[in-house]
Image (cartoon, rainbow, N blue to C red; front, side, top):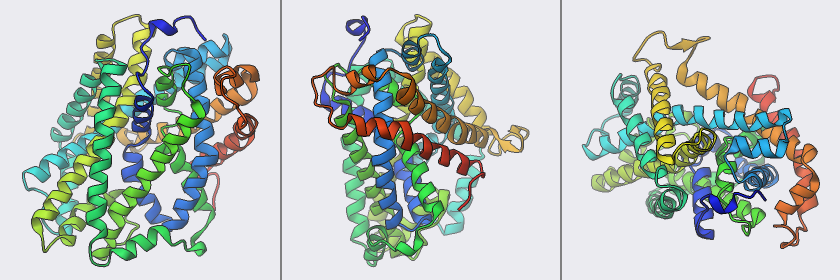
Length: 457
């Protein structure tokens, strides 16, 4: 271990470790992306394959980032640099920080949309026919002021948490936000599952139709497991740098994976029973949340408009909380980097990250229609950032991390971290090492080639 263990803030409890790190993983990837991916890829069979991918790919990759972060006990770039010993492998850490920084900018735009929908629900603007919701989203997302304003607001909310540090900021907020998120999720799931015809949506999620299994379903599940667990964004590595030397990395990764899968499945139970109840197809795609679902909730609870109003409001509050927990971890990646590399205060580092990501977010938002010319290679800045980070940087950082831990870092160092320096049995160490050396890099390479269109079903 490095000698600055006592000088750096740590999480104060095991619960804080789990809730904060789970909050990093549980975000719009679970509540937004997972349901529409499941809807497009056969429901139950997609869930089965997804859970398998989380176990075989997600958990080993999480443990690898935990090992780097806790061993370095520093920001992601420095943690990799310490393990790399002056070799080019140190660049993985810098690439992870850059990835997290860029994602913060455009992710805040989508997070801002969630806040806008909370406000619209409160003032009664989310009422109308299906075409109204489509028009509302188009006009809102291309407005030159509203989405930029909400982007800045949610980044300022994130700043106010981050500036208070790990225990008094991130951990305290996670202990409040994560239970609230679960309670809201369970309330909406209960209301959705009691609707007439809801059993069709439940069946869609839990009764597998094996004829729908294709290569693309496997690849979609692989990619989703990678995306929803916040792997290769620097988040897990940064949070692990605040773990104590007694934290059981394997147990923590497994618990976070269980929470991640549970939230994703509950998100499906929240959405699909209501969708099937009113005859909406489960494969509505990325528009599911902002265009399809407001109409679904309105129709599903037409006999009880007040209930429909409350469910719609709670749903977008839930989305905003999920977005905020992920933004906290993304913001912390860059804040820790600036604070430690530039030797400045946490407040000043967090402020700089907030300002810079607000600028990125503003340009990404304006590129969606408010300002002409904000395009590169035919893509809006928003789509460009999404493509570069999601389809290029994430798989590259994840692939290189697996190769680094599996083939470059001395196995004794990896084993010491894995077993807490011999305090734990480590009976799964060789299985973990095999997955990291062979299975995970191959799976990530397949995802990468598929996303670039170089590998087809």
